[in-house]
Image (cartoon, rainbow over all chains, first blue to last red):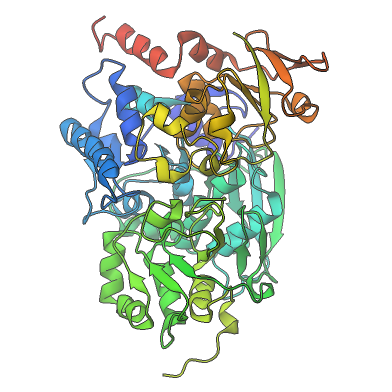
Length: 423
Length: 170
């Protein structure tokens, strides 16, 4: 019996020839990550082992991104605990001004490679499946254990294959594809499974779009979301370092729990209405839903490709007078590139703000917290009740193009609903 | 472990943002976290819940963020056990790692009314609704997880292992 790519990575990391879904295996980890919210707990738990050093400081990475630059004294204290531990241990560490959102920063630094096992104390650590890695989120204590041992336990997930067919419309991106998929299968539709994204549409999909999809595998309850390795992956990796890696390929006779076919030909830009990412509709069907805020950024949509899509729509337009539009580059590198390309000028001229890199508003931390009764269109990944502020605020998830169109129109809108710009 | 308590019932897909909103994540202090437990799904919960109470919930309990603050807040609020139809996987691991008893038992959830008292035996793997007198079998833990629970939590198991490896002198 053949193996899926997920099974092959786990078998290799467990020092085995094969593994079977359902069994628990202990695997060596290639990268262990924490952030300013989850690290303080991990560090406290790590110290309980009595160990003085982490297993390998070059495989432990700490990224302050959720509440930094510190939003208040308490978050400053949390970030300080992590910073001091990182420096004392000599772990990889990315400081404010040279960093950004963890899932944007690590790939930019060539730290997340095909075939690896990557775990992070952040649920969106499943992002690196875009590069053909097994990557998944865990809690702080699991991460503490991995910092001590260099291994973690994994229950080998069953794989579900998603086959995307048809012709991808020009205005559809990775975010639309994954929201549509979650809408179809539900927020526990892939519970504890590995989502394997395949098919002719995926073969032609950019790596940035794949990142958006892998990033949100968790929103279908999945353990990980993984893509086949191909020429596009190879080119992408070549841009960000020259470390050796070993990709994996699913066998033709690999076993899947389920195969789901999704024809994308008639897909329209998607939104997810409150309060679940599975509550999806075509954006153009949502008429007359006024908004007060738009957030563009996050580990899902904070890359330069996302900002380019937004700028293309926003150029020559103004943000609606009743809307606050907050554009947040995913990293310092993205911010620099956006400035070089003149994208930041387009945002600023349109009446949006262009902030420093942070997770901030996505989880209601700061930099765009919502008041009671407010509604926001956001390119982030969760629209749970209270996620971005008051429990009676509403979050509508979308891709960058719909977010840009909505900012201009002052209500939920698809890009094709914007009147032609007067320049 | 034998546990007994009255239940508070919650629906499917209770996410970690409603269990402990991120606006309270600037601390790791369990008592501070407990003051805000379940705040965005039931603002009165932290005041109503009593030591020993249990939570009964639907599918996918604890979905969303990896924040371990969620099971920590629930445990520190005095909740003695959760019975759910299913758990989001990160929450499941986190609860085991910090020693918050959880069981998976869909039928017991379906037939529970809020306020019903439950008796739970996590070792023997059963749940009993004392109002109806009906007993249910809970899904068993894999041996690997049983060992973590028996060691007293994940870090205790890890500490033992690094001592055995000679990386820490005992």
